[in-house]
Image: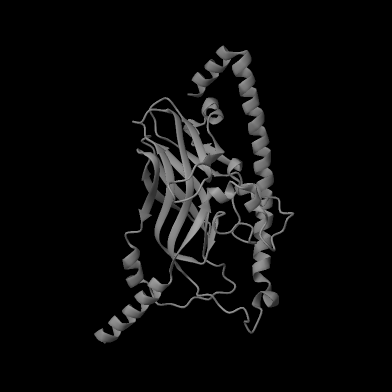
Length: 313
C-alpha cells in the first residue's frame, strides 16, 4: 500500500512539473505601442471598452482616501516612457512611468496604478502580455522588472481570478537604483503539489481558470518622507501550472453551440460591465471638473485654496 502511494505521488508530481509554464501577464513595451493594441480576432469592435484601454497613457493612479488631496491627485499620474533597454535583457521600447505625490504628513498611504476600466477576461479582447492569462493553476512565482530610484516604498502586484477574487503579491521595496527583477516566490508551492487531491473537475460550462491584472500598488509607510515618488515598470511574468492540457479541435460535440451557456454568462457580464463603465465615465467627468476648479482656485485665489486644504487635512 505504501509503495502504491509513493508511485501515485511520483506520477502526480511528474505531471505537475511537466505542466509548469511561464507567461507574461503584462508587457508595457507591448501596451505602450498602439499598433499592438488592435482588437483580437473575434472581438466585438463596438464594445464600450476599446482594446486601447490597456494603453500605457490610459492607466490612472488612485490614491487611498486619506491621500486624496487636490495637490496629490494632480501630481499623481502615469505616462508612456521610452527606455533604452536593459543591457541586452530586452531591447529599447516603452515602459510604464509612474509618478505619485504622497501626503507630506507622516501617515501610511498608498497608490493603486491600474487601467482606467477593469479588464474583461472573456471575449478574447485582452490576452497574454495585454493583462490576461488563461488556463492558470497553482502559481509558483511572480516576477516584475522595476526601475528603482532609491525610494523606501513597497511594491505589490494585485490580480483577480475568474471568480473576481483579488490576490496580492508583495514584491519587495524599491530601495535600489536602476533596473531589478523583483520576485515573489510561493513557499507552499511544493507542498501544494503533494497535498492536492487528484480530482477530476467538469470543464464545460465552467469558465477557464484565469488571471487578470488588477493594479500595481506602491505603499509608503508613515516613517518615509512624503512628496514625489518616481518609478518605472517593464513587465509582470508568472510561473504557474496549467490546469487543462490542450484538447484537439475536432471534439465530437460542439457543446457551446448546443447549450450557449457561456454566451449567456458573457452577455450578462457585459451588461454589468457596460453599466459600470457608464457610471465610471460620469464620475471621471465630474472629477475632471473638480480638478479644473481646483486649478483655477490655485491660480486666482491661492489663500482660499490653502484654507480648503487645511480644512481637508
